[in-house]
Every structure is written in C-alpha cells, then in structure tokens.
Length: 174
Image 1 (cartoon, rainbow, N blue to C red):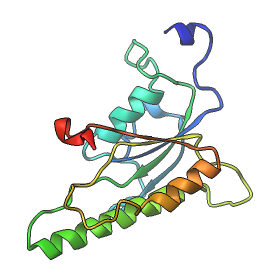
Image 2 (cartoon, rainbow, N blue to C red):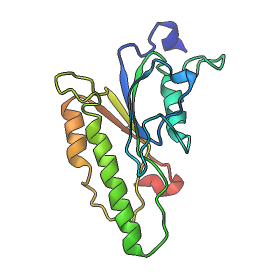
Image 3 (cartoon, rainbow, N blue to C red):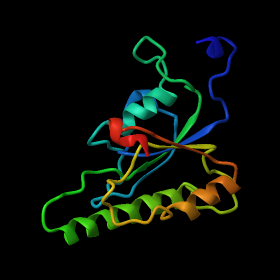
Image 4 (cartoon, rainbow, N blue to C red):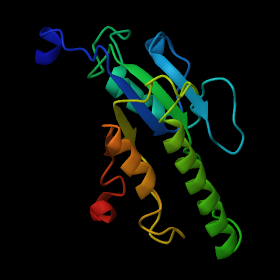
C-alpha cells in the first residue's frame, strides 16, 4: 500500500502468466493485452477451469472491484497463456510419459508465444515479467535443460522469468 500511495501501480508494465487461464471477470476488464489457449481442447474465449491462473492474475493485477485493493500492480497489462490442465495418469508408464511430453511441448509453445503475443514481429509487445506457477513430476521424461533455450531468449530481451518454488511442499526443495 505504501507504493500504491506513491502512485506506483504498474503503469506501463506488461505481465505474462503461463497458468490455468483467466476467468472473464470485471476485475480484468481492459487489463488483458493478449490471451491464448494452448490446452488439448482450446477455446477462443477466456476460461479458467481450475481457477489458479485467475488467482495469480488477481494477486498481480487485481483492482479494488471487491472494495479492497487486492493486486500489487493494478494498472499493469496481462498476457495470459492457458496451458495448465490435468494430465491423466491412466494407462501404462509409456502413455503417461507421452502425455507429459505433449504437455511440456505445449508449455514450450506458450513460452515462445510470449515473445510475440500480437503476432506482429515489428512490435515489442512481449511481457516485462512472466509468472510461471507450473512444474513437472520428478519422473517426467524431460531433461533438465528442456526449457533452457526459451528462458535464455527471455533473458536476452530483458524479460524477468518468475517461477514458483515449493508448490509441492517439502518436495519442492530442488
């Protein structure tokens, strides 16, 4: 609230969110610069079946629609990629690993889309910060470097990647 009192409300800041999507809610009116659904069954309309992406967006850019200021930077713009969805653990190990690889490729596609969300390479419209509240199980069939090239490109452009650490409680220590 002290920063808000100084007028620092996130003006001119574009925040990317790779998560479960975004609810079409008054709180986010005029705040969404771009939205894209990368899930298995993509939709053209904003949605968030699990609610986590909307929760994150509210913490970051939520205003005072509820009567109380909830977001850290309520004047910022959002670039939202809906990627996170439940991955079935049914079937054998190979089927589950194939699903995880497919999911990882969708995350990577969303990471690349963040570099040019309006599809016009002549505009610098990528987010300044990208929030990532996702992870993979230890048994996932991915090398540790799977996302390194995308992250390196983000850093080259000055994008600040932010990742959740510890979503798995004590298991998140690595």
